[in-house]
Amino acid sequence: MADTAATEVLNPDDPAGLARAAALLRAGELVAFPTETVYGLGADATDDRAVAAIFAAKGRPRFNPLIVHVTGREAAARQAVFPPLADALAARFWPGPLTLVLPRRDDSAVSLLCSAGLPSLALRVPDHPVAQSLLEAAGRPLAAPSANPSGRISPTTAAHVLRALEGRIAAVLDGGPCRVGVESTVLDLSEGTPCLLRQGGIAQEDLEGLTGPLQSAAAVDGPLRAPGMLESHYAPRLPLRLGVAQPRADEALLAFGPAVPEGAAETLNISPAGDLTEAAANLFAALHSLDRPDFAAIAVMPLPETGLGRAINDRLRRAAAPRPLSHRKVGT
Ligand code: TXA
Ligand code: MG
Image (cartoon, rainbow, N blue to C red; front, top):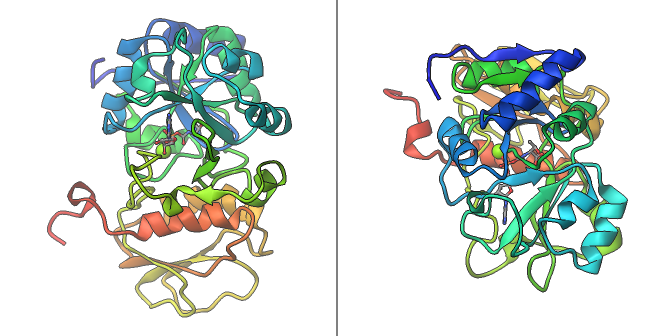
């Protein structure tokens, strides 16, 4: 793929825009598209070369597997084995922001690159009309990680996608801002005990109604079950300071709730009403817009560790974690 070609911005409400996106995907090109969580960087999941191009465009480590998006439970069952618990979860939460990691079927048509050497496959049915129409039109499963350079903040608008990947992908379908705003919850059912690999758009409490008490990947010993769960992730360029009661004068403040301290250089409130669903939807856009070199850091007010607050706090902790060398600002 030429690095200099312009990225087409396609209108999903125009049948020609959707048809163009599907044709590009069938030709092995990369097309970003909206889901209810974040924008995905889509490729034909059955095409090794197209899937490899995702890793190249994102600068993503090859050992980090990809989520495969399908139209529904039936399409998913052609690629992976569904234990009874997976069936119950799919019936309750699909379409929606839940990714199930399941034993890969031997006859799966999905590129082995999506599994990154694991015997499992991560599957998800997105709850977004554009994503659904695109899957239908493409007529095949789509591999799609979040459409951001590896380790950076996920995109919740087409403008975020273009800012980072313009010229590196064939097209983006502009479906407006994403409703949920944080990535899907990833639940591993490929081994005996269910394991929560990533907090996300479906709250742990809601899953536990069906699964019983869940253990999370952080608590599991042995090899890393979610290769993507590197400490530093979702990172803006600026350092983050968490749990801040009083911001400094040179900091931008990411605020939450009605009682906001004064004194920051700039303040952005992701939910003045203190609503975690609204906060999740606004989180990444706020981090994108506060990540400016005229601030010394982004100070973040504390958020409750319940419901979607768990996913929000997880992303914030990762954004605040020590960065790999390549993410540090040179010379500062
Ligand atoms: O909401 C979402 O899930 C978005 C939208 C576009 O669907 N996608 C997304 O993909 O966040 P990505 O690639 O950024 O994150 C996928 C996560 C990674 O942490 C990856 O390691 C994990 O899922 N994963 C994928 N396949 C896996 C597998 N077979 N076993 C364990 N973890 C897996
Ligand atoms: Mg991602």
